[in-house]
Image (tube, one colour):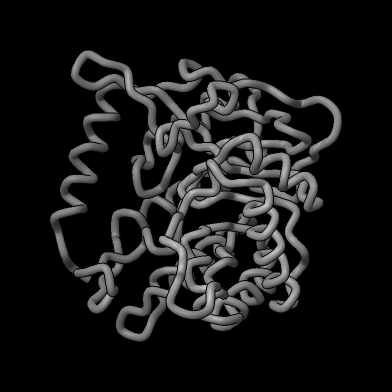
Length: 298
């Protein structure tokens, strides 16, 4: 998460510095169930650091960590999906995670994102019962919920008493077929992201959610993160998008999820054809990502 390379954080530190440089506020969904293994630190310090920088700290749940909660030798098989769980299991996940926020001494969360975007109706019901009011648990190109009512491509939706704000999607055409892509720093080119933002502005559609993670700004040699380099392409993309938003403040505002109202109107459904990028931009992104995956440099 920190991604220290030559004594400088190229993960979280780079992300926080870039947001500060361009005056942008963001939401960090901070995973809380890992405290079953790691204890309250170091994530508690990271959560306080994010909050002190003026950003949202909201609840992220990867239930695979609950494998370590059980004592003794008969531990359950790790399962990282919040979908398909009993409501008793989900209540425990929420209670466990929200208790960690209290011990971290950061504001109680009002929004949730499930690990891997695996979600079902029971998650929304449980979140509402636990006092949360917003979620961002759906990213159809990453995980398509089996419940068609949850196949949402963006916009804002009322689901079981919760305002759901899916990661925004766009359509592109490669090889004669239409495809969907989530709006992500690591997956999309700068040109594609800015194109979608411009289209949203033309049609006055809001909010638009862009997904990123601190680890996207580093490269690693293995899953243990033993040897790291900074990810030049992704770092450049983030700064370019933030610069664009900063230069067009009359048209766009960046806001944490807690500042989005969950009351009254404003709900709208994004159809998969609403936003699209040209074939040329999609092909350029394929080349750009391919080169980035193959080149290892500082």
